[in-house]
Length: 278
Image 1 (cartoon, rainbow, N blue to C red):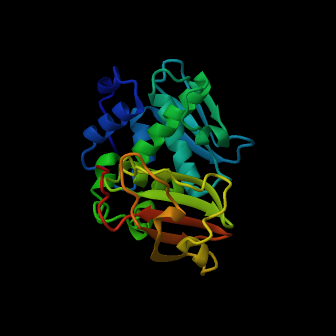
Image 2: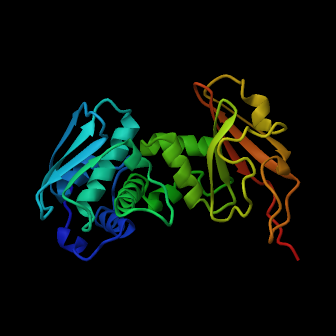
């Protein structure tokens, strides 16, 4: 059973601050992160899984948020259930959030932006809390193979070991990797969205709703067997345009994971170091 000194959380208000304190107090925390044990240690007396109509998670706590319970939609996939539990736990531990929260699927997808409503900002913070707790930065960056060249296989291994969805892990992978890397998600040859690491300087040319580049390696392998990974280089301008500060490399590496039902994920990286323009 885990024990946490709750006094240490009294002045913390940001998701990253609270998660860092949790990890600090549990230096030997196991992966995957034991959400149920952490919830119990901070005052969540009961976690129930049952069919919820229109909701993914519900937090019911006293006004002081010293004790409470969480309901999770049992009809959802396992990884969504874990993310929802982390999300509701975030509502419980973040002081500016309410003590009674009912969250639907759209709340778990709140995106960043300047024109967010107060509710959207709260849901975004809960999402950040969940991602930080499920994939603690310290442990995520120390994962075997993570600090090498970008690798789809490493990403898949991390998703499995941290017990999170592939897409959630991919977003974390991009956010934390020290090499220039981007990941493009597509369905039946149409781009859904993309994300990139802080050191990836180029814009991804195909935007949401655009077809996968016609002359890309990804386009060639979309009919490959499901659950397969294949990799090759292509001309970089299939995916990226000119940048103000960096020379456009000739080639780009496409590490392609073919999933089920027409879904595919492309990891983009470079074999050589990027060169700054003179």
